[in-house]
Amino acid sequence: MKKKLKYLCMTLICLLTTIIPIKVNANSIMIEPSIITVGIGVQENLNYTLSPNLNASDIIWKSSDNSVATVKNGEITTLKEGTTTITAYIDGWQSTCEVTVKAITGITLNKNNLTLLVGTSEILNYNVKPQNITIQNVIWHSSDSSVVSIENGKITAVGAGTATITAKTSNGKTATCKVTIKGQEIITNIPIGEK
Image (cartoon, rainbow, N blue to C red; front, side, top):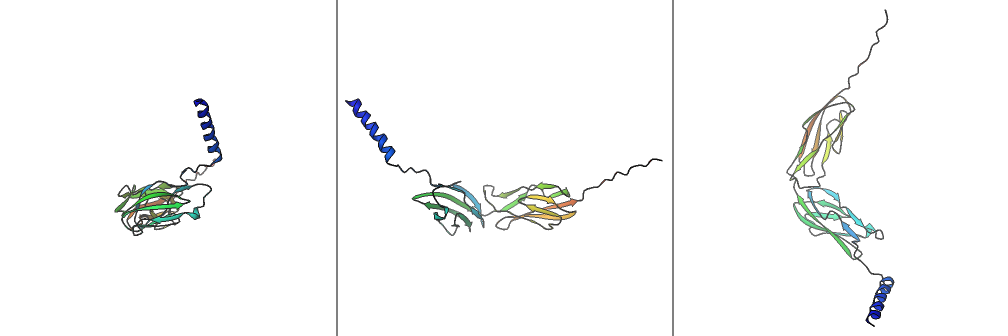
């Protein structure tokens, strides 16, 4: 009798599970990473995943402290040092990201002087202080783009001459590298005629 009752109960549970849909918290929205450290004056889009059946336009974004950082459509704008929690709400679910804002106190480049030949390229790397600031929004600038161009730290030698590459942080700290570009040497082989 007990075995029959147990069998009937298991059958009933299976039927109910099949007929009645169970809403499972599958993290309909998730911000990743959930903790970030950002420099002052940075505008950055938060990375998040969203269930396919939901629309990004329906997400409601809020900052727990708008004096530290504001948020609009997933893009944060950092204003001063401090910590705030960014929350995304949608369809009864929510996800948070703790944002710590710090002032960048300095920036350095891995090279202060560089010599290249026309047509070659080089990568400049930078470090900021404090080192735990993961998002900095560094802007690159060349004093003479006809000599050397710069994009996301990649230097391309365009023409002979000298130029200065500047890396500038979102709060105005700078570091420079003097770049000298030399023209490619052209060697012409002159055939020796027969006498």
